[in-house]
Image (cartoon, rainbow, N blue to C red; front, side):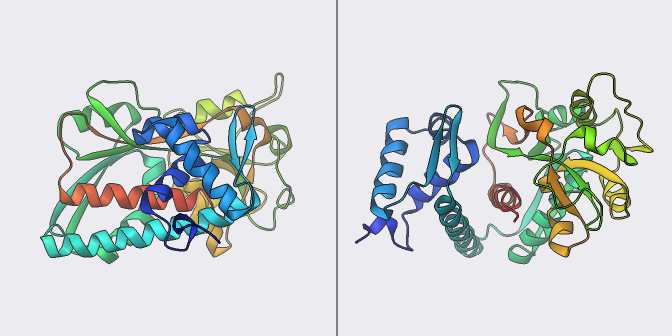
Length: 309
């Protein structure tokens, strides 16, 4: 018989432990972000694995990875966390926190990728909160947050700064994105060398993604894109027509994958390259009600997009 913590009404703290370990792939890193002892997190996970009679994580030399049973459980965990968020929204409404405005500073790729889904979901539960989005060059995002022009900032590769506090981090898979009828679609993974024979639509040099892509080009190979742009929307639109290929993070194309107009295949070469988005706030400023609620919604949506089938 499962203990109370392993029933469908899993304790909320344990849900948070599981979610953070699954996202970070490390008990130590998860414990650090949660502000608890590593032993406490490990003890909870081991107890749950024993109660369920199956491992939830594979113990690898470089960290943890969900097993098939763990994947099933994590879908339940994230559904439950989302339900918890909706409950908090209802409680917040009773406290009068669902009016006001919140400003988030971000970069062009996130604004055209996962952020529209975040805002749509947020507006459904908080229709009286005005959301303002500032799309800025990568180097201007942190200064805008520090200057008080934004309440939250969401971007890749924030420079270390003690005046900023990280609320959450999200790691993303980089892949080749193409139309469902593209000849490369259907593979478990592809290499950059496989893609070079096709017309490439890539990020221009104003985007941090371009530097990542150039690291993946085999030595001596010709990297000659047919389109270079700082518009993620244009990259996604052109990739819907074979034989074009573009390269973006999985979270950037979640909606298009669900609609069946794009396919995502992980890049085998990118295994050692981590694309990490961070949600930040000013270190010495507490988030007000609207900003806190939007931060919760951003975390829930990024967790959902990282587990697209």
